Length: 316
Image (cartoon, rainbow, N blue to C red; front, side):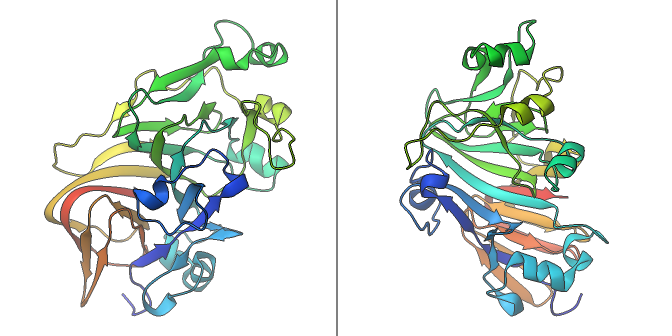
């Protein structure tokens, strides 16, 4: 391991105000984020998305954007010999319902948008009693196009009540929307391609409804492959890291940390603890605050993580 490879503590970028009219105050008040506006929907914890890049807060690359570090380190950062930065990590706060949306797969997105597609997963950090989200659609034998043309999409949405610790895998083509009163961790492909089906008649600052993308949304929706009716809840009983989601583009694990354990190196990892913890490697160490995300480069050797509490770990 060389001196320029170390755990990168990331300063998030934010989406707020009119870009996330559904957002709330929890990212600042509950999760300790230095949000630029009172109403903030998204904390882009680890992001190389142009215009919303997170920045390194520690060490030799302090102040550099993730894109700059990627250009310097290349496969020593991602573990992949070519391609763009593959993943993005967010924390979201939904005070109101998000738009009903769907994401394309890589083939459609590259053909129509010149970008990667988007599969993602949600881990529910907190939820008000009775909070629900949209997870698929009940077509009941009707074609989705007919439902949309008749203006009946809303009544066919499949709603699921959620609780802290619930996990939802949302592969491309899945119709979905976070409901009000939910905060979640989201791991996804590094892409901003989103097609809106419905936005609850919400209007922007100009008084006009937000743009919908019905043609594209109908093109990419996969109603013949509905998500499982039962949500998966993370096991909080300890033991080895638990695999929560195994997507072709990423894996999401939960670790119930009590004391210390070794994180195996050789792959890029995103680590987000829910309680304060310490990373130790070689002759270095780094304290992490609750919900502070760190990127461990693929070029690092194994390291130790020490503390007490739940830790989410994602890797490509």
